Length: 452
Image (cartoon, rainbow, N blue to C red; front, side, top):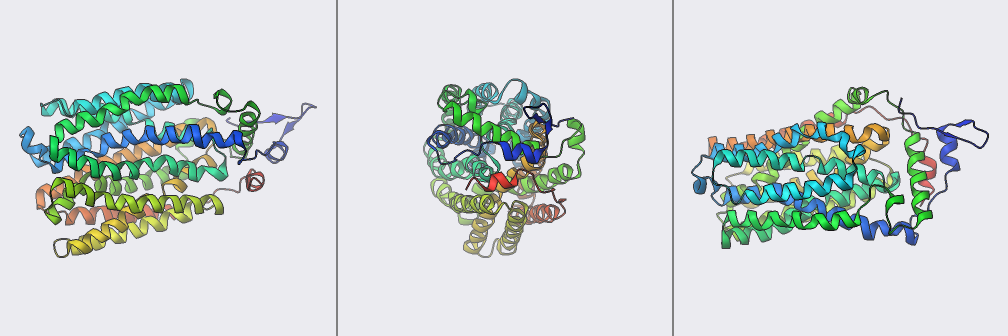
């Protein structure tokens, strides 16, 4: 059983409450622990940025005439966009055990080089079938990055910090798409989509060295962390985990009702958000008849609003201890906003675009609280695999969203049906979260609250 325990000096086993009360509470504002925000989080944030850049810039290639350049149909372009998620899905669960056995630091170093190389090849290959293989390999290389990062942060941040830590990681998503939307639009306009893919694939390879020298899997392994602060932090994290109900095996954790429900919920959420991310440039260009440069600027607007929404939501989540209550209403708002876009698409582009801005921000806002739910429900020996399972379900949702939104655009010649599809998926995601079983109060709550 995954049931971590400690013994007192007499050899008696301590229960979770006693363990929590005997752990030294770290001063989270001390110079030692504050180094996590100077050394670790910026590197984590930057590392996730090229991962999202190399999957999201495909939408600009599609909008810039990838099909015409390669001599392929719109349906084939849609298939290329979605094949990324096939690789993303297939290799996550088999590789999840490596996170604990090999370590996050080593795995992500290799993955940075792998996905940067595959992303660069996207601009060099001319064969449709070779591009299909490359897209699958790109997804495989990036498939483990997100759950591995979440697992890393769970080893470095306590419960009352985790929502914000997760949000700062995931901010790499909208921040990247924001600057990418502006820069990529002009790069494509000036040099073409193929040269742009080459230029934007190289940073991941170069960044691998920085990641290797700075990041460590645990606080006590980091040369830039004071030993006393690192040990105190690890003790508190271990005490918080000791209060989480144990599970007998990884398969038992996978069969838990809350894990199954969260997997279904994240599938629907990802269907909506990846349909949005990958096809927004084409939707904007189609609706406003703009150049690629101006399309990029306009496409970045929803992500600017999303950044503010994510920071605000994660801060409220950590201060109140609320998780689910901040997730489902945001997704409900996103669903309504995209439904409004569906109703007015083709009639009023300003109103449709304003709805897209609201919908995009609401889709991104609750990421931090959502990924903070799992370490508070699942014991540490199983949490990496459970995160990977749920992220795999999201990969299937991403495949469905990117393919179906692109396919409906190709068949109907309009984006409106895609808006409806994304709205329905986000509505289902919101409603499923309302069914999530309540977790029992954590024994680690009292010490966590006393840190403030």
